[in-house]
Amino acid sequence: MKLLKELIHPELATREGRILRRHAARGIVLREEKILLLFTERYNDFSLPGGGIDDGEDITVALARELEEETGARDVQVKHHYGFIEEYRPHWKPEYDLMHMTSHFFVCDVAPELAEVRMEDYEVANGMRPIWLSVSEAAKHNRQVMARQEKSMGQSIQRETFMLEKISRELVLQPS
Image (tube, rainbow, N blue to C red; front, top):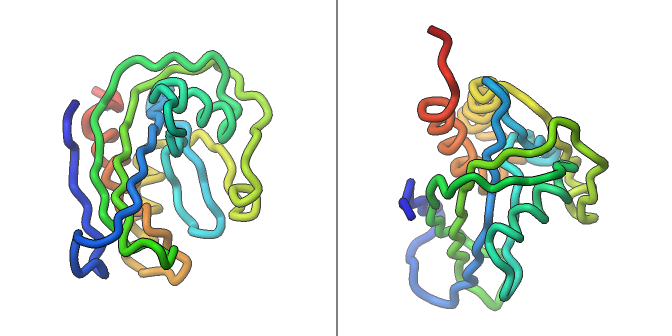
């Protein structure tokens, strides 16, 4: 497994204290220059689909479940582990000082047609929806949101933008 990046939130003074540890699996689903993403209205950003791994759940089973729920993907085939990002950021629950998130990224393939999504209530409330978009357009949009320091900006935008740029450089077939 390959560490792609370590991200430490600028408001975090230390990595010591009461730590909530989370592990997530996120999918990289490409169709030529387009990628399957989630757009979240609340944060005005694009992100890779995926989410938390339940206790005792196999990481690839969790990824398939998350892709199905969030995007309506069917026949999810996990091809290979692309790498992981370690993130340290403040946590909003008073019983924790910070969160340590490890996000594992996998290259996947899915059936051509998406089915209905089965999002959780908070995802619906945040205006989350799946979209096929060019990787470069998504990265450009997220970079603009960060440059404007939009008040609604979510904490995951740095991770997601880093990954979109890396995917654009390394996985998207460039026209010859």
